[in-house]
Length: 303
Image (cartoon, rainbow, N blue to C red; front, top):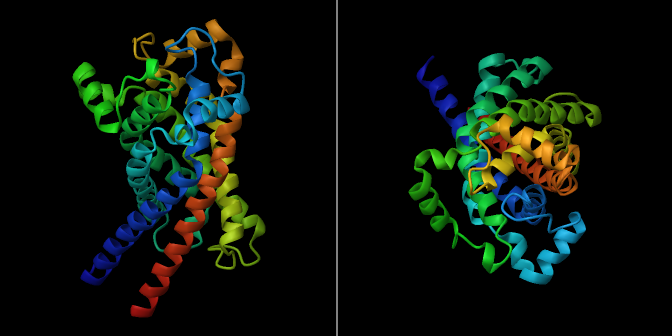
């Protein structure tokens, strides 16, 4: 690799990281209230007796009534700081993976097999980043009243987890997160490619698609991929919300959850998750794609 090629490669990585970070911030801001509702529905009964909420709307209205509008944004500091970084990791991992698999051939970068494999690689890599972020976010989100308040913010949450369980405590639910994401990310990127291909008149790299169709494709990709992995995400959330070590691992949580509450447990919070997945990923994909187009335009004009 020549010095010029090496510098372009480094710039591509930095562009993926920067555009991923900015688009991640946008995604969190538009989707966090529904994520809070999802987390509370998924984890009710883990640390309390019985279910507090009868459904999505009941959870939403009770949160507003009891905790005001700010209650819907509990735990947002963790994803706003972390999800932006996580999104940067996701898109840089995906960008590097697809370049490794397909090289400089733009057509090959859009082949389903390469998109699928790059998605799996991305899912595996980003698990190390997203697991601690989702753990702290979930622990903060499920604090619905003073009696259930164990943590006074993100920093206090991290310190108390480290004191109680050490560094491994921040990675509680790691394997559930890993299983979820090596399935979810191939579905995520393949679905986005599929929708873009469906509505584009020019084919890849879909330069004819503006912000609205990109947002539609991204929103559909997000909603679809979350629907695919949702039962695994329920198990992940229940493991991470468990303060009392009631579950020894993924399969133990799966067995006990099903035994205690039946199959319906695996769809608790599905509606807010799918609803949240659409605006979040509509923002992420549209912002990321438009920023990367600007970068490529500048890059080509300079070269």
